[in-house]
Image (cartoon, rainbow, N blue to C red; front, side, top):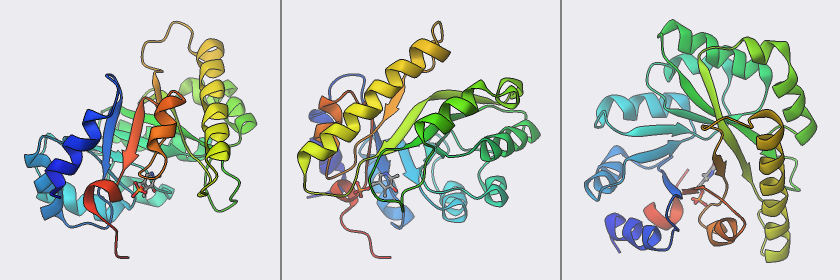
Length: 222
Ligand SMILES: *Cc1c(COP(=O)(O)O)cnc(C)c1O
């Protein structure tokens, strides 16, 4: 199967309004070009320097999303062009993103990453930390970021019930946040959940954005 046909196949199963983010991390630029030729414009990467190199090399109308753990000292590599950072997991990081966006006189869209999985290795804010962030005075003062929603990863397990439960928890939290903090806001709309193994469940549980890598590009070699 070609990359373009993989994308078409996946897209045909997505309900209208659900965005496909093609996760191209660890794959070469030429594979991204193939996806681009097939019409894909939204791509996700997890390493700042790798992303900066690909940005230089590839068409400029690609919408780049950052999905990995981001260290504050790496933001500078992507601040001039990144469209969305999906992996905001602290107020400190968000402040630094705001500062770097200001340097380029631009806005960066962000999603707050929420920890829902059982594994401790996965990054993200607890629900309480997320609310504390949204209530803070520092957050209220940021002018170069826009919070467009939340992102989360389910536990890596074959237990479908558990995955479904975690996605449902995230959906419920998303709905509560919207009501409480963004009632008249038209941009807090994105619930990013679902990867190659679990995106069908994520969609049934209300995902608006799926992040799919291996189903499109094949297995990654690290
Ligand atoms: C790597 C990654 C994905 C894509 O994973 P696949 O299993 O290849 O679809 C999605 N989201 C995040 C946060 C990732 O790090």
